[in-house]
Image (cartoon, rainbow, N blue to C red):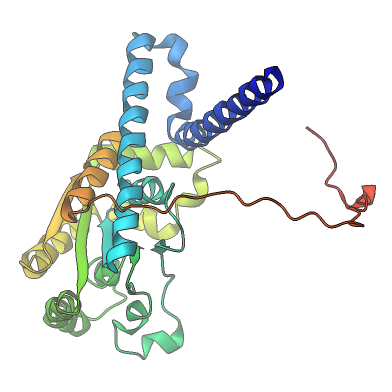
Length: 307
């Protein structure tokens, strides 16, 4: 009995350690966003309030991620096809929100599509053709980190698409999206909005942060210069593509944490879901065969234990 109690206590200790490790993964992800403020906590006017706010953020994020897992089970069970588009200005927080949505989901169910610039062959195809290949099948959630709306934004502003191509896009896209919805796809479109001042601040942070400089491409810098052109393009895009079947939702991205929580909470509201009864999982006994010998691994095959 004493031995059983000891084994139970040891197992509980291992479980707690694993839970702590999972929290550390989230903290590590947050550390990238909060590195500077974390280092400056001791100099903050009210570090205790900062810590409390951070704790509240994590608590709500974990709760919402638990709901996302429930939603994932519902989508799988009911064979739903969910497509979520993320658009917005550079540094508005699309990528951070996508990371938090997919962080605890099964990558075979929830997958992210971030297509590069079209190849020479793709430029000769029907504009929507390369996106169609990535649409969700039954039981899938697909998140587009930028989408066919590139044509209404960067391609238009940077001159990669002619005025005729842009006009053709506007004439086609609403019917294309109506077709998707008629086919049974749940289509949700988010635009992450950011103020002029906040984007300038985030770009400067990236310029001076060696871990984030890779996020700034020449195209990003040029988009900063053409802020007003992007604004005009966005306004026409909303006017011509905000339809009842596939409306736009704007996420205020100036506060990254609030934007993530608001986006996830809103996404959960768009798809009514319930608990799915899960079969009880029983760990089977491992088969043991007489004469089985596990041979030692040669030392030179191991990764050097530097830590």
